[in-house]
Each structure stands twice: as C-alpha cells, then as structure tokens.
Picture 1 (tube, rainbow, N blue to C red):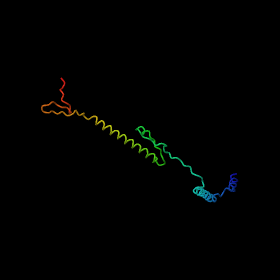
Picture 2: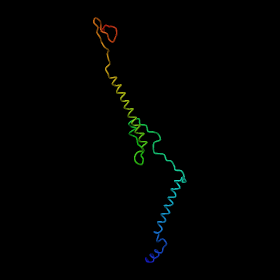
Picture 3: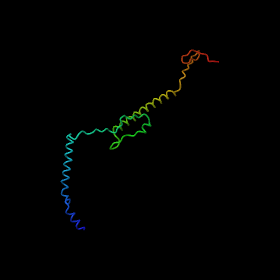
Picture 4: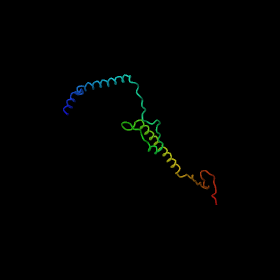
Length: 141
C-alpha cells in the first residue's frame, strides 16, 4: 500500500516546483517596483496628512502641581522635541516670575523691617530742644 502511495505522489504535477520559485520571485519584485514607481510619479492618489501627537493648546505651567501632573507626549525616540521645548520654556518662565516675586517681597519685608527714624534732636544753647523743626514745646507734666 505504501509503495502505491509513493508512486502516485511522485507522479503528481506539483513535484519540481523549485525551478519555478526564482521566476515567481522575479515577477513579484517587478510588480512591487512598478507599484513604487507609479506611486512616486503621483498616480497612486494623495497621501493623508496625519496630525502630530502634540497638545492642541500650549500647556501653561502656573504652579508646582501643574508641573507634577505634566505628562509629555512621546515620540519614536523619546519625547517630542517641540512639545518638550514649549513646556520647559513655560517652566523657566514660571520659575523666573516666582523668583522675581520672591525678590520683590523680600525687598518689601526688608524695607518694612528697617527701624523707623525718630528724627534728630538738637539742643541749642539757651533754647529748648527742637524735634525735626517743630516749635518749642514744653514736656507734659
């Protein structure tokens, strides 16, 4: 029985297909190359424009919580450069404005904590003491 199957198998027309494979690959390569040429010449239709994965609105950093919640869009090789640059610029502006506000408040605190000048007291010979140009007054009794 096995001998009969083997003789039938050897007589099937599918045997010897290894001689056809290079010709099939050549035809497939020519078809792919022809398709590329047709598309490159502009006959393949228009390509669809895809929108980048950047936020529609520019992210505004106002507090440290905004920075902590920030999730930057990623690209093929890390973060997207444009979105990252915009966010880092906003964070730098936030830090600069906070540092300017802190410097202003420190100056205000320093100015308010200076001792209040009480005026100069001068004593003239034969006269009473004058305080900042005020007329002579008797001290209260």
